[in-house]
Length: 508
Image 1 (cartoon, rainbow, N blue to C red):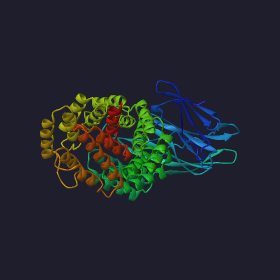
Image 2: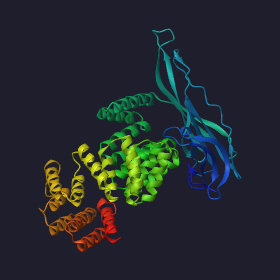
Image 3: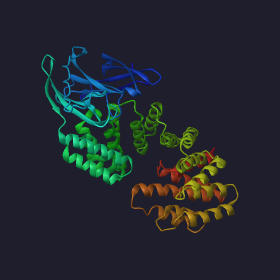
Image 4: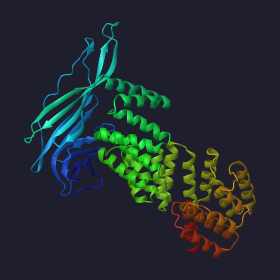
């Protein structure tokens, strides 16, 4: 029976088989090929750790008919590939031919310690294409065997399996001169990308793709820059090409394409891509974090929390993970849990948004002292924070110091709130300062053409109208307004939670 910590990954095309990882120690798992539905073990593969999965790589590449599987094991100095076939109720290892000796065409080229053979793709159920990579070290002509330069090299090996699962090498294709030039351009582009010279990097990647349209690294690098520039459609096209070219090495492309889809508002498409990334490399935190964000955006807070938990478990020290989990917990009214996560995020990165989020959780808890401290800190760190000032007003006004609340909010309106006709925060501030009527605030909330914005602003308007009524001593009208706020079902709005908190306090 599967335990909560167990993972099934690297599923076969029809979903019948997969890699089962059973927790066996601290960050270690015992792995094996299983038939998923009866959970029957068909091949033991030994122990796995997070380091067992080479970055951006999975372990298994299935043939289209799921009858054969290539198993890649990586290491610090390269890796190798084994192939297994289904025989009855188990997978049996196929004896592979010896890899050919690389041709060293320069007398000063020395042998190297990197020899990496990994499965590129199945071109048919009986034909596996592998990529063999190494680094050539060339002895300097000026030195005495001490100075070396390095360059990438490699070859493509095509294996054929007959009906008896005998393997033979069908072809060996060394890297062409154009492919070598493309690889060098990609390396230069990656260096420029790291240095922040994105335009020059894209030019290198474009040139590399023109020389070698099968260079997945060029598409990947270009996709990263396009995504950074908010060209999400271009990024999606590049990441899709990476997935097509190198399915076992496409973890980063699945995550990148998911991020680009999420940026376009396609959370379902993003989640599907994150699912594939996690299936490929289930012990990496990145895809869990991103999938948690997409689930949270869809309102699936339980699913988001489970993903954030996995991200933390698999070593993510990213403050954004704790912040995301805090938001999901707060949406479930677990404000204590949210505050703990926001506090951890602040320890890792004292970002204004984390103070703001912790301030809203303290506000929802009615811990006015800590809420006031956090919201003011958020405002200090982020001059564009237009939301904290109105909450600070609420805290001060309900504490009996309305004059000070008015003065501070009026100052904030001058410094931070634009006062423009379409600035929603300015309208709320104007309402609190008696410059806008309740009727006009509600009308302004409903004026948006976008349904989601109209819903959210209407929730806000009813909450702040309720607070004004409550502070004026009209408890009955306040309760009605808070009910109206909840009726909008704007569950992602802080004001929705605040309205519920006020109703609970008023009716207990």
